Length: 219
Image 1 (tube, one colour):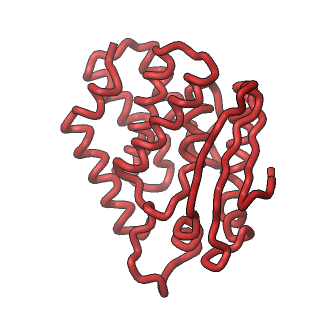
Image 2 (cartoon, one colour):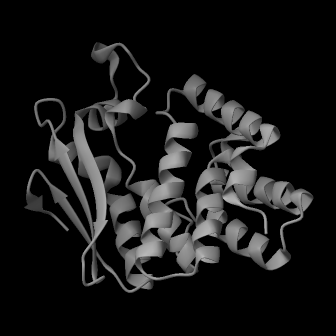
């Protein structure tokens, strides 16, 4: 089996992720490099592992999480589909079995809002982990006066955590936001579609998605 470690140790893959993030930096996007893909990989793995999925499934979602944004190498537009094609070539070249490639590629191709659907548990976990990654350290812009709404919202987040309840019925994204930097409405302006996508993804794996901001349950 091709492992998550094989993927993160691969110098070609690291180069592609670095270049993809450089393109987004040039366009003014928040960080999408190793901090983001690493966090997404581990949060997605936490979801499936907590729900009792096999170690094999957990390893596949780690791989999908690490590779999910490589399509930004081509273009931000439809990057999930571009990323799926790139991931297919990379994983096929490494000798991953077709059934595993199919799972990873399907998840990557379905992770973006607007076109993505949680068609399998790996895709569901990837969607939730990706859309929940909001944090100050993703902001690249050092000029506070020129922050756009994405910069403000990410910069305002003091803490962010996803957690599955002990009865394995609810997945909660808990955020602490500095409302002097960004209002809760700002968060919903840019993240409402993503939170709805998370709710549908959670439902597909038997969970209720909950969003708590500054102690208030909003979803």
